[in-house]
Length: 172
Image 1: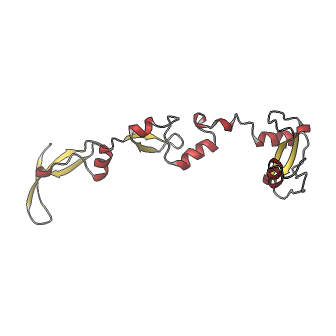
Image 2 (image 1 turned 180 degrees about the vertical axis):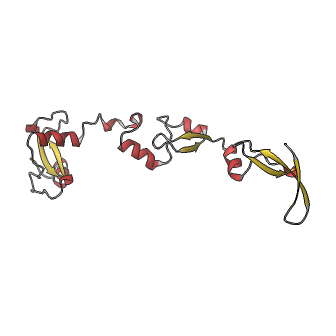
């Protein structure tokens, strides 16, 4: 308690107050001497009871409050602001340690596509002839071996025909 002050409350009564520091954020605030508070706000009080710790989001770096038990239960050990931040980190591959095993090493559809195009392949569905939007064309491995990227093993299909082929609706 740094110094006692006198003030008039909203009912006109004379009260004694003291300036103290919040136990959580250490901000100075004034409280009545007959009801000395330890925290500057309800938010600080609530966070102190939950024993939350400030940490940085692994994707965007924003300050995040998490309880030690929540941090301990994290499979990866990383903390994110929300689910959207975690998904962006996975999609953009910025936090390598959280990538699921099926994400592989980056040899995905776009690498197949570049190999196919460099070898002279045309982005047009070989089954139905669709070629309006190149993003709707996928490259399929005939032998279903994703590591076999020879041009003889690659064929372009629209998304619908590709799904139908994998579902067994038709054959190459």
